[in-house]
Length: 360
Ligand SMILES: *Cc1c(COP(=O)(O)O)cnc(C)c1O
Image (tube, rainbow, N blue to C red; front, side):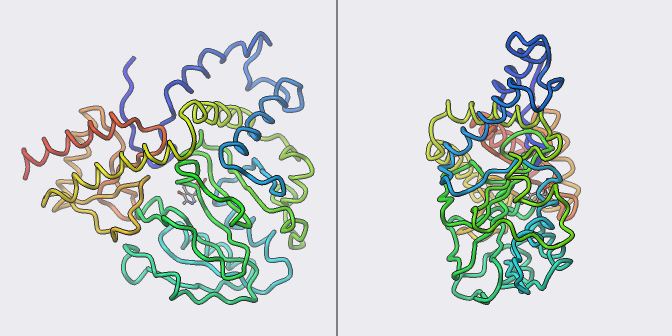
């Protein structure tokens, strides 16, 4: 067996100890004689798995007790609709910050349910900068303020929590949740698809303050209604049992690594050395403002698309895979989530130096 360093943006690499543990428990989960995949979601054994995952998540993120944690389906994209359906609460509009391709998609979907006011957009600068908070137009009558803490495709990340302007703050944390500590109490709602930094695809996490739920728009499907899902412990229907179990294993692994502050230090070290290697060369470039470069997704360019193709191909042959940028923007991108060991980043930096030597 040989494992590569997988720089995919999502689904992305998982910690190897998690995969090994899942393999060991695959056919016979702890003497039950069956795989987790084969269990009733209502069984005692599975209920314990589900509850442990929630408890570990609450512990790691420090989720206050007046927040519900929901394990849903339909991805973060499903929540682009679920959020306005649940959180408009009789108000006419919601405020969104446009910082990249994912917030742009969230805005387009929300427009199907209510009026969207765009507080600020960095579309005109090619999504390479964040507009300072002081320049945002936030309407105090709106239902909530939505932003994307890490733009997975563009490689732009907020390194602070923006002021909420008196509105419930709603955040798409799909690609940087659990990469650093976060003060959940500053948010009305946090959501994140699992397949970037938490587990396999098939699960989306919603952390929502209790007082915001129970006002879903008429016509909201029951499975997207936070109140109903909370009442049924995310088991209004059959949940994605196996991804939920794997997410639980990832959370146990994370706890073994220390706190989220420890994880943040590791992630910062990985990102800083990769950006330093890019900045030190005239051969590689990253266009993002220094104050909002993503620690999770590092896009970079070479002088031509042809050379970028060669780079991705030769890197893959060296065991460094999925370095192509998103199809919508091109270029190259290294996604270095929690599961990417520092050795993977070191190997990439070495490869980059060799490639520059050859083609520079
Ligand atoms: C991947 C991603 C999404 C979409 O996730 P799906 O689970 O495919 O719907 C949304 N937002 C961000 C920031 C992402 O990285």
